[in-house]
Image (cartoon, rainbow, N blue to C red; front, side, top):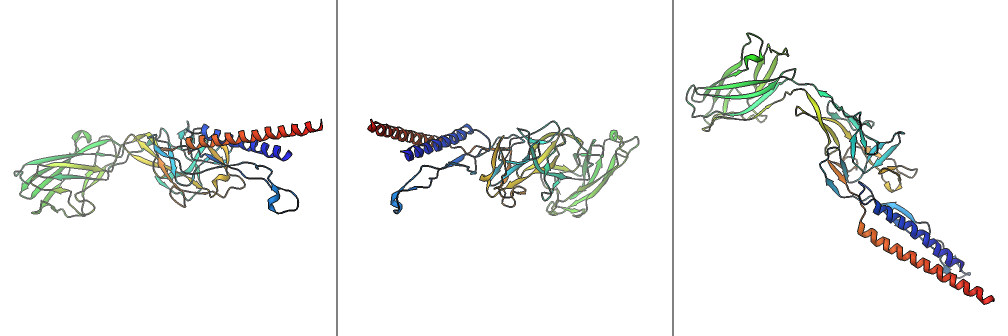
Length: 412
């Protein structure tokens, strides 16, 4: 009878633990990046009755239940939130708590604190590599990611410009067409340069680039460049030749900025003319230039690959940092320490930390989150199974108790 009681009691304990695991899985049905646990039962050593073979053994019940997290991939949903991120594949985000303990998480719900430090919603510092001049070196030691919130990006003077222009071949001699383009000086002040084209003969045009007189100190020359263009019978530019951009110098700016020196490219990188002469209305398209005004940070976002990018009000984007990803060979050995974080134990393999998509690491998807891996239907099925097992073990105890009472009654 003692064996029956002990075996049934071990089953009650095991089923209770299993139900606790199911309850935790269901409680975290909506927890970002949560990995559901599975329950593993094992039997105890059997009692040997007599000196016979294995056919005279009686089991002693079920052993301690083991609970292991299943690190399968959760569903990733793009939610459009700038600082959210998810890992597709193997790996964890690396974070550090207030005691400088290194933790790991699949929850990519991040935010900036008052000092611009990237953190989890529970306050752990997200680890990665800061960029230098927009370039990240993921081979060094990781550290906190700090975003320059409220900082100003310095202006940059225009050094190169181009524009697509078609000059109508049906234009009469002395007919003109003007194409304006905005450029920036060293102080970030915008200036409009206007290229005016005048047909001088079939297939031949002159050009003059001007700047408004108000942009110059008194007596400044408003015509800053001029010359001639020649087109072949196919409407392509033949002179000036490819590889010789037109330099446009602008001195004496009224705002005191450094003189401008802008190279006007008449050809693209493949050597094809950007200025043509076809029997089509004169028009300008796709003006480009590489200068910009000063700007303030308007948004910080995490992009695919884990790059942390700051967008500025002047339209510029600068890479600030990159998130680190840790690959761990036996993640189920880690301890759950709350706040969606895991901590390495003595049994945990050394973490291999690297950039997204390298060294076996999964890839980071920006503006996305990974859902919990809890399967509600499977958990309810497990719950029913454990409930039935608990009821069966309870019935064994009841039966054993009845038999014990009957045995005691034999004495009387």
